[in-house]
Amino acid sequence: MIVKIIVSAIIIGIVTEISRRFPSYGGIIAALPLVSLLSIIWLYVQGEENTTLSKFALGVLCGFPATAVLLIIVYLALKKSVPLFISIGLGIGGWMIILFVQDIIIKNVRTYFFN
Image (cartoon, rainbow, N blue to C red):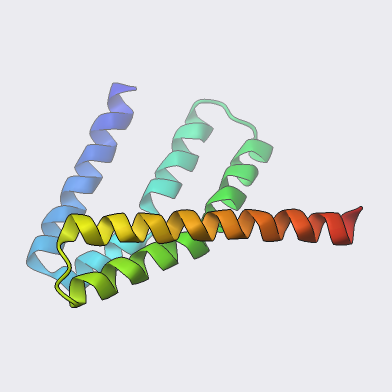
């Protein structure tokens, strides 16, 4: 557990330092699925089966549209000089709404096409 925390903290620190010096490159690096990949690696190291890793990867993929909406909202709010934490709050609100709508759509599609 300690090794996971240390490795993860080092990666976050490196990305943060790059972002401070080169914001655009830091953003590109931060957009890499580092947390997802680290999580998959840690699950694998802990002995999880490929089916679990596959389900995790699918879950991450399903969360992508909501995450994209969150980042778009934060970007637009900051561009309009909305304070950071309010921008993040608005982004999280949009993220939650998209996840809720996405869940309803997925349930209806499953019911309509697979039952």
